[in-house]
Structures are given as structure tokens and as C-alpha cells.
Amino acid sequence: MNLGNLALRAIPGAWILNSGIGKLGMDNGTAGYLKGMAASGIPALGDLSDEQFKKFIVGGEIAVGSALLLPFVPNRLAGLALGGFAAGMLSMYFKNDEMTESDGIRPTQDGVPMAKDMWLAAIALGLVFGRGKKSN
Image (cartoon, rainbow, N blue to C red; front, side, top):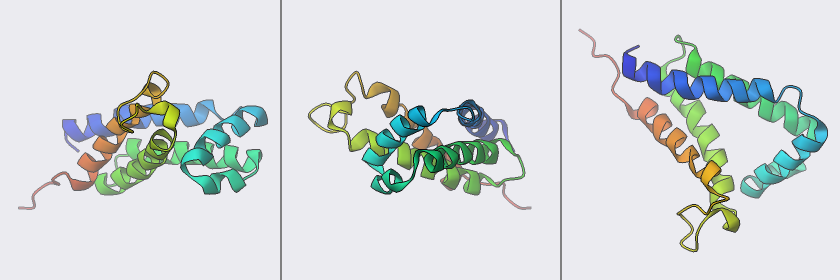
């Protein structure tokens, strides 16, 4: 793993893993609020109970963060995991009118925290489509 790939994986990996660990003690009220936000982008998540959603989000964040941090996970696989995570986050951003300006792309003040997840999508693309080591 080169220094560039290390940065692309370690920084978002540590951030996402920490987020998942931080949600371990989340109460059902908070889980319900987050589920409502998530369901705006991925409607099927609204069918989960608050407890099921909590397990889903905590497990997902810990799994994605760990995949990025573990050096034996190939870049493409880690990038696909991050890409799925970023796609879910961006679906909430693009499907909530209050998060984007009238053009549907630029963030409003409320949308800025979600718009930052575009960087995660770019990192995922770099990991999936980046060049691997050349064999000799």
C-alpha cells in the first residue's frame, strides 16, 4: 500500500469507524430520528424498527470503517464499501429539497454537512478505479 492509498483509506476509515462506535450507545429516540432522515433517501429503511435501524447503521459504519483501515482488504473492495456508504448518504442529500438550492445540486446552509459526503464518493472512485501495482 502506498502513501496515497494509505491517506485515502485511513482518514475516512478512522472517521467512519469512530462514528459507528459513537453510535453504540444510541437510544431509540435518536435512532428513530436518524432513521427518518435515512428513509428520506432510502425509503426501505423506514420499514425497520428503531432498534433494527440502530444495529444496521452501527454495524454498517463499523464494517465500512474497518474495511478501509484493514490493510489486507483490497483497495477495490474497500472502495466499493465506501462507495455504497457514500451513495446512501448522498441519496439523503439529493432527495431533501431543504438541503439543496433551487438547482438541486448546490447545498443550502442545512445541506452543507451532507454535501461533504461527495468527497467520500470521490475517494471511493479513486480506490475502485485507481491503478494497482504493476506486476514484474
